[in-house]
Length: 398
Ligand code: AMP
Image: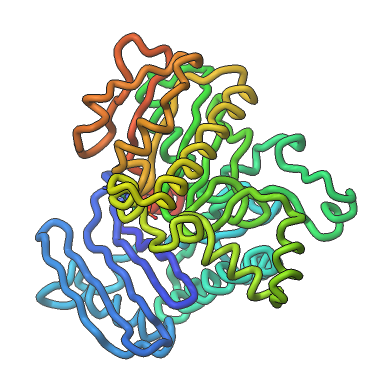
């Protein structure tokens, strides 16, 4: 069985050809700057450690996908003889609204239902749908499956997902917390449960810290709360997103600075977060280097970033009545010993004891970072959203 996993953005297409049973990745890569000058393809054959980068015009996602298929089936550097070997295609879909609490086999009716959520994710869902339609056109007859970023969080109780706005805003406009990164929170919490020996009861906090960052409370395998909201702007401070702020600050800044809605939206989504406070970069590595060198704004940005994560850990421990395990994932969560250590500093009252030495050594795979005496397990667990998409696709398409 070979599943092609596709993640389409408005100008990008990420792909992986995966064996959903073994998890083996045959080939993977990325098309960037689709429809923009300087489009690039990256193609990697994992087993052979072969990598190719190519600058080639890709006016639309169709040309991008054609290029991906021609590489996958290339006589010399390909990994399959023809697309007949692709058994099914799994697609990341950002917003499934309240309709999709699980992955789904895609057909015209389902695509219309996804389209109905476009308003909720105007940047992402149309791009995801374009990817799906392009696959249907270029590889007719294949089964396509949609895997939603929001699905895992559909188990949240009303007290966690409702905003205290007038009720009709929920009823008529579907304004509520949905949460994102669900595929990652599912993968990491399930991996943690397996490590714990699949107990009937478990209280797990997953910190997905990357350019986008979110945190979730997973009780007995179900998401009961998460930090992102109606959109991925709520919650933690991120690379370029502000996360939680007083909603009144939005109108205040917009009016004082005489900004349009679009400009204010860009200010909060693209110019805030680490970039906004630090001022020089949105990248955590740059931030850490500058903070170590004594840059005051870097030190401030790092403190705010960490304080937010710590606050959410406290809130979610309270929401679950305790915590058995805290997991770190995402580019920052998996790689920054500094962020992990500072986040857990002061959480000894919860029973957290970090082994600072193990935490500071870079090791691949799942790593236990807590001491033997720690009441709370602390783990680094590399996320694998593509594998979840491949497995769900396999289950629904076989
Ligand atoms: P992601 O969005 O999950 O790819 O994560 C990207 C973020 O991970 C960026 O802010 C990177 O700076 C950060 N990152 C990657 N490697 C490291 C590292 N060794 N130390 C600190 N941050 C890292």
